[in-house]
Image (tube, rainbow, N blue to C red; front, top):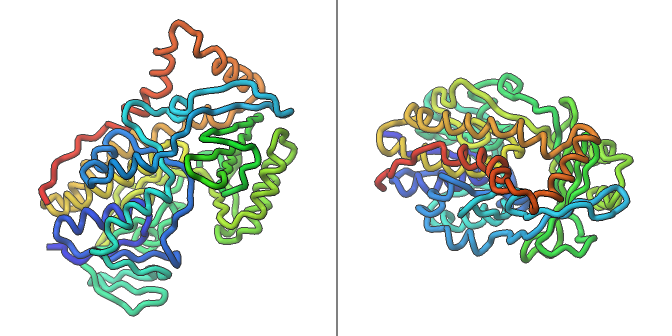
Length: 392
């Protein structure tokens, strides 16, 4: 029986998997390239089946206590005039018990839940996986494991080692995204401010208890070639993409130049025929990245961790994990293209129509049907899996 398991990546998928593996009697070790736990990031949603996973972990009260408590989204034109407002939950497609939390806060909760029972190795990375389970590392001495799990994101190192180059599995969605911390220039209070132009969107938000704010930029773009660790180049790409925009965008770009947590990446999905090979198996974004445009990456990571650990413990193995997770992953990946059309507007006419609909929505007789059309597809995808109760 597989007992000793290496997890590459201490993000949501990796830490959640470590928890469930430990609950089922396995011995997980987590290796993370970063020198410490990553506590930054952006706001993420937990919906549908993922809420069941959080509840079964005993974290629901803690997660809700750290919810962003966002209230409203305000839209501005290029001259800074407020042109529309929208309820934050509707803007995020949330229904019922869905909860929004900062990714770093969720990571901290998962780490605190596991740190006393799980070995974490920070500042190191996998460099090789032999057929007998011997794993080599950048810094540590080789160690042998029964299984190696790639929970290391869309640009997974484990996937590259076991399955080959990322280009064979990545599908570019025609957009890029940038996120970073910025000063709260607008005096926001659990609010999000948005300015959109054809092909480009900029927004900034401040969540409950945050001393500063987060800026998010999204723009239409072909695939770009650049070093993901070249931060100065990423800042230049962002400035070039947002050049000429009005509202507060120039000030936000200036703040982004000083940010020490800038993240820039293509909006990309990962599509694979299988998620396991030899001693390696993938979970979360490494296996089936749906992109931030889906709004479901965190929920997929939580559910995937639960299912993988449960199937390994119950005898279904990696084959059982893929049978349960694949339809769920595909349903949530399908959300991204439609969502992107509302996130980055293609033309001035389409932008005018969207803002007008936002203004009219509270007064329309068919409001509930329209809301259901916005949030219903997300809810159906978020609940498109029946979670077994795997005895611990």
